[in-house]
Length: 365
Image 1: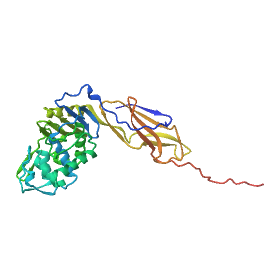
Image 2 (image 1 turned 45 degrees about the vertical axis):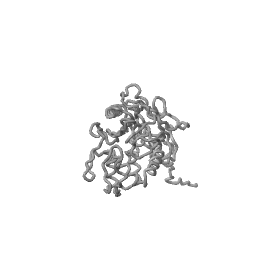
Image 3 (image 1 turned 180 degrees about the vertical axis):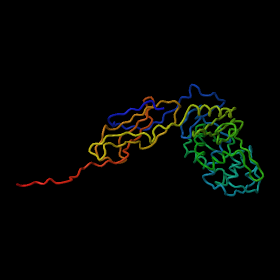
């Protein structure tokens, strides 16, 4: 709700910037977790919960989220991949590829994301880049492009290795980017699929056990512990949740989602219904509307009180040109500026120039 709306008489000269405020309301009532490191991030990038979010950690098979994204950005889904002997028999989880068979990129992605196939990871990496080292270079380049400042990838499957690590914050950034890819989101949300004679069942139990869950990736090694990256959406609000080294990760994610969805929301603050009438001097109309140049929504804790400060002139002189600056709206929380939005004239008002309807005739006596 908007606490109050104030109208200022004179347009101020000061210029304000947009400030990204930190959301720290979780300190008092946030859920207790089994995870050593955790984060909950809104799809727009705002963090609503964090616990050791920047500590470099082993990430196990959640690595495959990056593998999938790099493949999707470099390959077509219907490309055929011949399975070579060196792709098979990789340590750890597998989709059980056989030498000599052929799969599409999409089928291998299903094996990668649903059952965490390490064989699928190697097959996709070699198909995409020629060898795993070249593929890893693509992974690290993508991490750099996404601003994953505390991450380093050494393989496409996530088995423990020197120089292979990330953080909860970086993995949340990665998942945000992945969920913008329609093919990733579609495959990641599958509860099962059939590849040849194999039926693949998604390891992500949250798809059935957590309301609104639309994707995720599990991971486990003895050294990394249980790792989980997931995404959930309820009533148009989307969150990414990451837990690393979390013995009770399924319940950690459920608790974090329930807490986040009940504490935060996307609020429309400025919309097309807001408008102000400004008197016009010497114009063909007596007044003109000033309206916001753009709508503005902000992600905030529920029940946050905001103040809107509208600044504009008491009146204006004709001519008035449509789209010209008429003032501004300042959105404040507890006196802190969150956003400035320009007010513009909704229509034009020409100068009123009355014409002479007749000439006065002078009679000379």
